[in-house]
Each structure stands twice: as structure tokens, then as C-alpha cells.
Amino acid sequence: MRDVIERPLASPMAGSMPAGLRPERRRHRLRILILLPILALVVVLGGDFQRGAFVKQETRKLPAGPLVQAPLSAAQINSIMHLTGYMKYKQLASLYVSHMTLDEELGQLFMVQSYDQFYSPDLEYMITQLHAGGVVMYAFQMQTFNQTKHDIAEMQKHAAIPLLIGSDEEGGFVERVQNIFGHHPGALEIYQTGNVNLATQAGHRIAHDLQLLGINADLAPDVDVQLVDGPDQYLRTWGYTPQSVIQFGGAYLRAVQGDGEIACLKHFPGLGAASTDAHYALPVINRTEDQIYSVELVPFKHFIQSHNKLENPGMIMSTDLLMPAIDPVYPAELSHTFMTDILRKQFGYDGVVLTDALWMTGIAQHWNLEEAGIMALNAGNDMLLGAIGPYQMMSMINALKAALQNGTLSKTRVDEAATRIIALKLQYHLIPNVPPQA
Image (tube, rainbow, N blue to C red; front, side, top):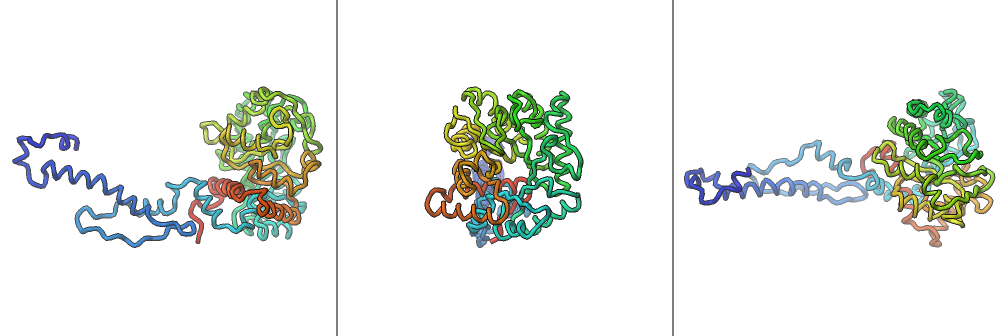
């Protein structure tokens, strides 16, 4: 092809060449061959979106001739029509969100809890009528394998949009499935062996056990860097330096997510220096900004920015602690400085952020659930943990609606949060990667 293009027009061979192969004709044909795929792609992609689905356009008639033929295979067209090759998860998720009612969208922002030991009418109401986006499970609700698997299957069966089913299965001190599978080694227990392979093995085992039950989100690993022997660090950390947390916690994280389980880093921005249990009071960590950036925040930044996709967390859990050097007014999970300026803008995290339980005393002694929910969303969190039962969930939803009406919460912020949640469900194949039905 290059020889034909560069051959002089006055070539001695020109006069003896067949008319159909003269350079002028070849250049003309070359232009057609270059433009044809572009034209074909424009025609295929030129359809309009109507309620999230492609509207088939009337086929344009081209002049008859040997060059008029199907430019793409049926498989290629099908791939384009289903957007899997041309649309990112968040773009596809935004189509789902645009189809939701306000009630459905607000419901997706909740990972709910229940006081009931088994699948109950209250839980079903939160799923079917209040459109909960997720459910968190505790040990008292998981007594036997068959009972747990049945209850979770019932939740998913009744959910219009597949649920995130989460559990804090860290192993060691914080275990949820021990009634069924026995003891899982904890983070510090593994770290003290010095064998990183054991962290990998623990991640695979936990992912396997959770998936057998239908739990798709492990609210772990804890990537706090232990600096004091506080109550929130007891046997839960992967060591005493950012490097040990990255090494051992990273091995666990890669195993969990490599097996298709959603992992959740916690507790942002880091509880490693807390001497107070956040369940009972608000921890105040009086460290300098430089110290916090060089220790507590290091594992979060590393995993968020890692080039290894298995280390990029599906979720991050924020928590209630006060770091006056960075924000002297608001606890971290209610702080725009921490949740948006640092986590989103500085570190570049665009995934789902789940709050810690908003009923914990560190928050509840200053704000009720309704106030905390609004503040958490405005700070930059996406999913709210803390509503126990339908009464609390309904109360929080009504508060969010009132905030939307009076302007203290924007619809844009709600859309952003819901889109991230749906994108996560698409990414982990809880929802099929196709446009929503009109």
C-alpha cells in the first residue's frame, strides 16, 4: 500500500497499467476503505438513548455496490448494544439511577441492620418497601449454615435490586461466622508469625466461606496502624507500621477481592492511635498533621492508588474520631475535609464509602441518626450504616427528603452516592452489565 501511494504519477509503468489499478483510482479507493469503518461505527452508535436503552434507527440505504456490506459482526453489534465495551460502570450505573424513583434511590443509600435473629417481616419491609441497598449480618443472626444461607437467599429473592450483604469478618477478635465455620485467624495473630502467605490463605478462606453463605461484602481488612494498645486495636491490626499493614493487609485484600468478594478498608482515617472505644465515646487523636499523613493515612493512600487492581478497595468504611490538627470541629466521617478534600480529591478515591454505625456514642452524643445521616452524605459518604429496623430507616429517609426540600442536601449528592453504589454492584456482577429495561 505504501508503494502505491508514493509512486510518482509520471511512472513509466502508468501507461501500461490496467485502468482499474491506476494510482488515482487506488488513492480514491484507499480513502473509501479508510472512511467506511468510521462511517459504519457512526451509524451503529448514532442511535438515541431513550430511558436508558438504544432506540433502533431506520436503516439508511446506501448506493448498491461491492463495498456495501455489514461492517461489524453480529457479536460486535451485540456488544455495542449492551454497552459492555463502550461504557464504564459508573456511566451504566447512572442510567439505572435515572430510572429510579426518589424512594428507590434513597433506599439504596442504606445498609440496614435488624434486631431479629432470622429473616423477619421487618427486614422484608426494609428490603421491599424501603428499597434498602444492603444488609449487615452479625454472628447472632448466623447460627447454622442452612439457616444463614436460606435467610440471605430470601433477602435477595425479595430485593428488586440485588443487595450488598456485608459482615465484619476480620477473623480473630472480630468474627461473625464462627458458629458455622469455626475460628478464623486474626490479623495480629497472622502478623506475629511473620509469614505473609498466611494472610493470603486467610483471605481465600474467608472469601470462600462468606460466598458459600451468600455474603458478598467482607467489611475488612482493618488497615489501622497500631500505635497504642487501645480497645479498637485489640488483636485487629496487621502490625505497627504502615509497611507491615500494607504487606500483610495487602496480601489479605488481594486474596479476598481476587476471589470475587468485595473488601472494605477500615477505619478511615485511622484508629491506630485511639485510646478510647468509639462505641462508647468519641476518640480524640492529638497528633500533628504531618504525623497523620505519614502514618495513619499511608495504607489508605497506597491501596487507593495501587496499580494492582486487586488492591483497589471496593469499599472504604469511615469512622468517628476527632483529629483536631486536620478538622477540629467534626468527627472524621462527618467531616467534608476528611471525606471529600482528602479521601476523594487528594487520594483520588471514587468508590463507595460506608459510614461506621451512626448510632455509636461518639456520634450519638452530639447528633441523632437523622442529623448524622444528612451530615454524612454532605461530607462525602455514600452509604449509611446505623438504621436498625424499619422505623429508624423510615425516619432517616424522611429526614433526607426534608433536607432535599429545604436545600441542606442536594439531589446531585444523592445521585452521586447512589451511582457509586450501583456501579459497585455492576462491577461485582450483582447486577447484569446491561442497560436497565425501559
